[in-house]
Image 1 (cartoon, helix red, strand yellow):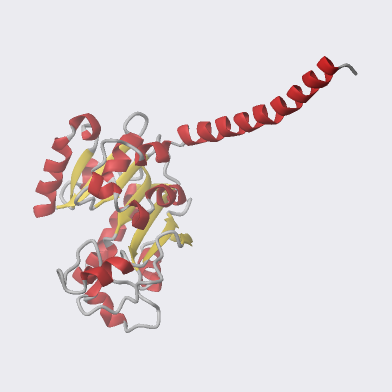
Image 2: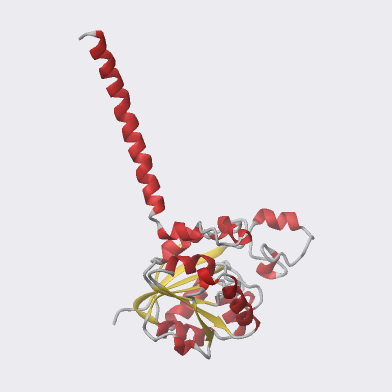
Length: 270
């Protein structure tokens, strides 16, 4: 083999693995670009303060666990400040439908104001006041119903049975109910569920199953083992509320947001 042939062979040997590596990275980039949830989470329309909480709330993994797709009809119950609405609205804008089922009261007016801030993003969100306007959402039409950190409010107010019945009625047979909430250890006194903002997983399962739902499974994506769930001022001691103000603020910031359950239920096929 002459010198020119040896050089050609050497260059060919180097080029092949480089080409394969480039193709691998290109494929990875394509997967990222075609992940609609990741694209919505990365939306530049999101509020910077909300984006800063992503390490605690894990929106991409949470929505993927619940099986949210961009062509679904989705209800977000009690979106309040719109933390998840900022993601769900662009995710569902083109091919899906997003209903915001917001309880009446001060939160309803503030949520209307929130939607009006960016009509190009939120203009297709369908707002229904709960419970009076629930009928705006056709019964049995919803693929996925999501509620984030709201079940403890129902339990403290004694409205959980009626609200879960609404969830059941709105979902299609086979539809998904996705729940995230602050988790109370099973060994603790159940009376704390009325005051602390924390709930036992067994309590949430009991409420959902009493309404007719089937338990599908759980994810630990929103777990925080640093949260001991025994704070004098309840879950609101931790960020983002920080009810103690500047007192021990660094301590609570180091703990981070609450330990949360992430549970998936299904309306049975009949």
